[in-house]
Amino acid sequence: MSFEEYAALARQLAEQRRTGERDAAAESERRRGLHAAVDYLHQRLTAQGHRLDQLGRAINVDQPATAPASGVGQPGAGAAPGPSAGAGWPASTAGTGSTGDSTAGFGPPAAPGSGDGGPAGAAGVPGRADVGAYSQLPVGDARLALPTAVSPAGVGVPAQRATAVDPTVELELARRLADEADRHGQQAELLAQRPALLPTWSPLARAVAVYSASGAAAGVLVLTLVLASGVGLVDGFTLGAWICAGLPAVAFFGGYLVLGRWGRPAMVVGTPPRYLPLGFLICFLLVPMAYCGYLLLVRGLR
Image (tube, rainbow, N blue to C red; front, side, top):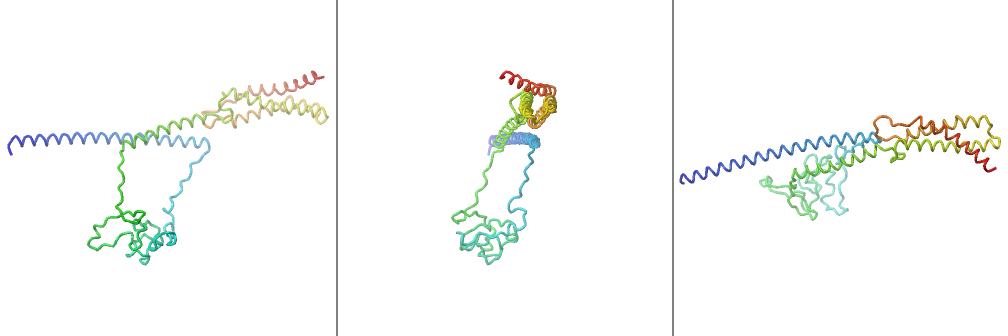
């Protein structure tokens, strides 16, 4: 080989080395970017979890208890009787999950842990009637045997490998789901900041409506007392006391309690206003006005 050929080969090797270094640097940069994206998503998901806990406490919803997985960590979970031969399974596979006896049609004795609640592995999968889950091989060829997955037809086929996933695609999908979760969380917060009573109304309009409704209900009671007084069931002093003080106070405190119970948002900073002077004025004016209106109506009809 001539010197020029050696020089060309050396240049080629140097170029391949530089290409490998560039690829390694790019791969390292990509891995750092993936790790940074994973850390960022972890922080976002942690913050979302805390916010969801706050929302759950605001609406008095506790976290559901995590139920233990079926058959994991439970005593006797693996001792359940296996499928019977009369249910369409081969006779040699009856009782595969209950005992590890060699007389159940398996050939060699079962491995420890196959009948005491532990996983039986591929040996517990129903196979053909004339053989076990693994075919019997000579001692010298046992090392070369590969585990097989049993198809529904009973024919042993090699187990499929898991499909490789692209971490970039998975991270992008996780980021989109986190964005969707943020959007729904913001909507939930907006709904939690609205009270159950007249949610689209302003606090002032809500308070006016509640106190007015309470005063109107008290006005109906005033009319009832007036009718009772007309038939002699209530005397004049009692009627005047209820009209001037009793029923207005009842209407005021009723509206106050209604605003505190149904007019308070689930999530609110501080105490929402209840407009006490306005409610007092409405209730203590509306009830006597209802009585005066009744008197004017009666005199007008006469």
